[in-house]
Structure formats: structure tokens, C-alpha cells
Image (cartoon, rainbow, N blue to C red; front, side, top):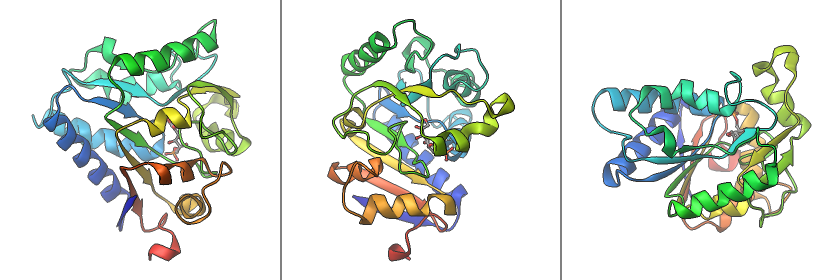
Length: 242
Ligand code: F6R
């Protein structure tokens, strides 16, 4: 595992975007694994800028997002589908049929989860997975004590996660469940970049990088992945790296 530290969150996002741009240029039909969250917003802004400047096209790109809340229609403004449309998909030349998120509004969530795994395999697997990290060490919505062998499935959100995302919902009424790619699904990606910015992430990053690999910190599973890059700002950087 490699890590790079930058003075600011803006530089972290710029580096992440420049890696994605490079990969799209090298392989225009790349399969991207995408994430939502505050950390990713400047990454999508930088990608839009690259697209508008003619540096990249999404015409042949396929994408799979990590997760989606359950019980929300895709059109609900805080759904991750609506968020991705607003931040990226609505503004680029990506084929809507090739943008995938787990169907959190399906009648049969287990079936939707199984289908998602099949779709990822049918697309040839994920070339580059973008990840954020939760304050509790989660990746995707794989909360602490998720088994490392997990695949896409319905999960209950941890109270820390619900609190962190409450501001995006009226009356702080966050859904209690989500569908998420599993940890094993994430580890199948050929390349992973994980971003952490802000002091609230430092403890989780420290646990993921330096404490024993353990299901209490889902991001520690990345230590077994052969091609993972951590991009950290000064506030999230573990003291051991300072
Ligand atoms: C979102 C996701 C989550 C976030 C994490 C960090 O699709 O999978 O794991 O990456 O919760 O979120 P922010 O960036 O809002 O701190």
C-alpha cells in the first residue's frame, strides 16, 4: 500500500481527479467504481473541468457506485443516484445505461444485490475503485465488524454514519439501511484510491494503516490489496506519517 500526503483537501481531490483522468485516457472503456460523500465533491468538480476542457470523454466509461440508501426513490434529492446525476452524470457524455448504483428501492433487495454483483462481473470487473472512509473506518457502507468476505448486500447503518449524513435529510431523518458493495467486492477492484480529508478522519486512517488488520476497522482490509493508494490531507494524516 502506498500513501501520499498533501497540505490541503483541495490538493487531495486534484490528485485523485488527475489519476482518474490518466486512467480514462489510457483506457477509454474503463470500469470505474465511484463513491459519494463530501470528500468526493471536489473530485467530481475537477473531473467536470477536465471533461469541459476536452481532456476526457466518458462516452465509453462504465460506472458502478458503491452504495445506495434503501427505501428512497432514485429521484429523491439525497439518494446517491440523484447525487451522482447532479454532481457528474447529468453534465458529461456518459451513457446513462452504463451508470450503475445498487437499486435501493427494489421490492426484493437481496435479488437487487445479487444482480449488482453479476453486473460488475459482466462488465469485466472494476478497473479503478474510488473510496472514502467513514469516521468509524467504514468503506462503502461496510460498517465495523462487516466480514471481509462480504459481497453486495443490505446493511444497517451505524449510528455514527447516520449522524454524519443527517444534514442531507429533512429533520435529520436518515434511512436506517442501505445496499452496499461488500468488502470482498471492493477488494476485487484492480486498483483502489482511497481519500481521507479532515481531522475527523485521522483516527480511522490511523487504525486502517497501523493497527492490526481487523473487522473492527473495515478499511484495514485494504492492507491485503496489491494496488491501493491512500491520498491524505494534513489533518487526516496519521501522526506516524507526519
Ligand atoms: C459513500 C461511501 C462512504 C463515504 C464515507 C465518507 O458512497 O461509500 O463510505 O465515502 O462515509 O463520507 P464523507 O466523504 O462524506 O466523509
